[in-house]
Amino acid sequence: LAKPIDTDKLEQAIMAHLDDEIIEKPRETEESQELEEIPEEKRFLYDIEELNVEDGINASGGVNMYMGSLQLFYDTVEENSEVLENAFEKKDWQLYTIKAHALKTSARIVGANELSELCKKLEEAGKKNDISFIEENGPKAILDYKKLWEKLSPLGKKEEDHTEKPPLEEGELEEIYEALSGAVEQMDYDTVELLLKRAEEYALPIKDAEKMENLRKALHQFDWDAMEEIMT
Image (cartoon, rainbow, N blue to C red; front, side, top):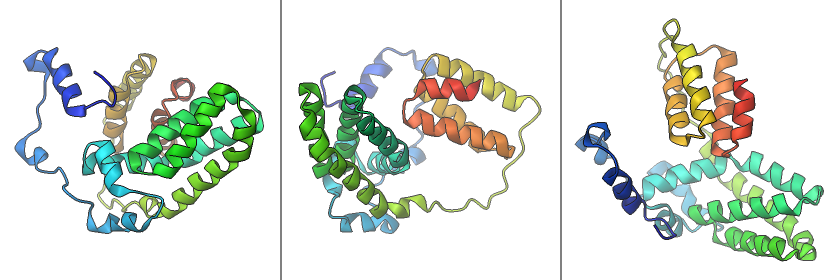
């Protein structure tokens, strides 16, 4: 498939190579949950001048995907900006270029067009070894990145779940960890995500809950080395 990837065509291509008995199709009630517009409590997004919501929706492939992309963008700012700043300070221009490319893409997907364009120029400068451009414009990219993060702060106020979660049955947590270990080793993003969501459904000991949260953050960074370290 050519870029940009059409998610519908990608899904059709994958399903064409799978047996019918292992395909789980969404029920009608699940299909009807696709949002057609930004929820009322998220309408503040339209007031953020650095964000073009409509561009983000189009780039993400729909409102549901956009809201997920935006939440992921928000959740990973701290980690991403730290890596970008460290690469800048250590003059690790190869790593800096890689991270500028990643931020260019994620910013475009959420509709942060100016930030995406600046990161594109930083990426190109890194490839050309134009260090003076990076040194002159790199700090602005970080500043703009964090400024947008602050404006998206309502996304960090997650609703409290007052539902009492059931405890795990004996041996079930070990099974989850064993499955996670195999999935991480295979770099299987979808399986890791599925297992983490499964773990979230139960009341976990504090140590294990923190471990799952660290795995989730590393997964969103595609940091498989960090995940392997967490699992040891």
